[in-house]
Length: 152
Image 1 (spheres, one colour):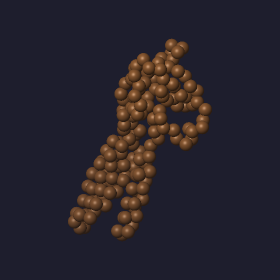
Image 2: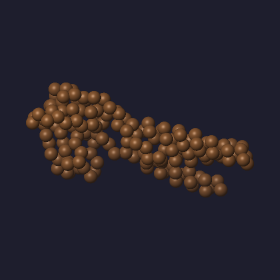
Image 3: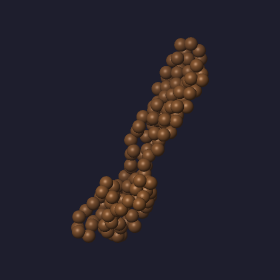
Image 4: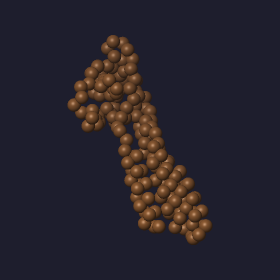
């Protein structure tokens, strides 16, 4: 029984870790699929920059992993019905904690950059806050038809 519980725990943890992998929203990081693809380049002037939070959303794997760990830890307390009750409480507490951990891992600092194209049009692009932009500076907008990033 313990071997089966350990196998279930390891499987849940592996699924939880896989769910934590998120694609970047950086102006400086390209995925392998984005590399060597042609992009349209436009030049613009930064109008304003606003700090935002980027939230990748919860997949539920944090809650599942936490529940599995909490349930396993709780079930080792006491014996009989007490062990079952402790396992249930551990699973609930672990699920809540795991959901909170996942939410915090998937939220990070971003910037909303409003630019004025040379044509006079305004555009706003949100991306990771890993590059500093200032109003009045000239920047490049790189677009592949789906995503646009702002770079220097």
